Image (cartoon, rainbow, N blue to C red):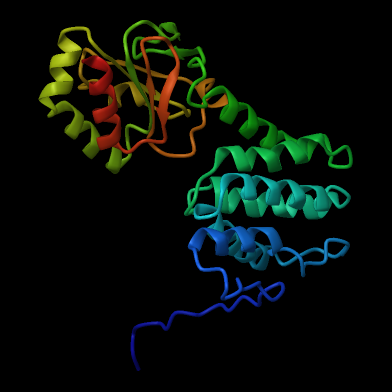
Amino acid sequence: MSGVRAQQVIEIKPLFEYPVAPDELESLQDKCNYLVKVFWDKFNFKSKEAIDQYALNEAFQVYVTAFQFAGAKEVENSVDKLIKDLSGNPMMLLQFGKAAEENLYGPRAEFWSDAIYLKFLDAILKNKKISPQRKVRYADQAAALRESAPGEVAPTFWFENPDRASKQYFPMSTPTMLIFGNPDATDWRLSRIKIDSNYAIEEALQKGKINILFIIPEDIDGWANMVTNYNKRWTVGQSIDAKKHYDLRLSPSIFIVGADGKITRKNLSLDEAQEAILELAN
């Protein structure tokens, strides 16, 4: 008897028959424009029964795939119509909100769109039939997304440094790489080595052309001992307050703040972040 356990395949029955673009539409954009316009036409928005969330997530994923190639106005019109169709059914709106989170915001999403996801968040928050308790998490997400969006002034927050002194971060005239992460995470430890070995980054730090802040946005026992060997030119600390103001869906989450105090980039890979901060240093 084999010691290898066969993987169980879970089949999800589609909620409805997904539309197919007509053959006469030749371009990919035209096909996707058609799909986002008619995708939900066969869906029953008047149903009062709970929807299979897995099936809804899958349908939403198919829907979102067309966003990447459709026109921006067509996508916006489609989402606005979808939310309007959901407005009279608060429980269904919540389920669509979960599907939107899974496919537009969460760590498994293949296509992130803060602007589109905010439309679902706003619809949930404005719906008077949804209880305040159910809205708390969505309100926190909406606030963080808006406050830490590119083009916004980087939010201030209080943090504790390794000496237990209370400090406040506020954007300064020096371009800054603002990193939120877990010092005990293996991926981050490897990333820190890459930053420390980047000669151009170190030179820019020495000359005062850039700042680097590493902030731990969660309560981790003994965190101060974990950062004792960090580059002394970095500002390091812990802030539970920061996640109220910054979109920290990744770990680490890296933001670039320009000399004008505004966020220029977010959700960057380490390589992208190093390139972006060095561009601002020159």
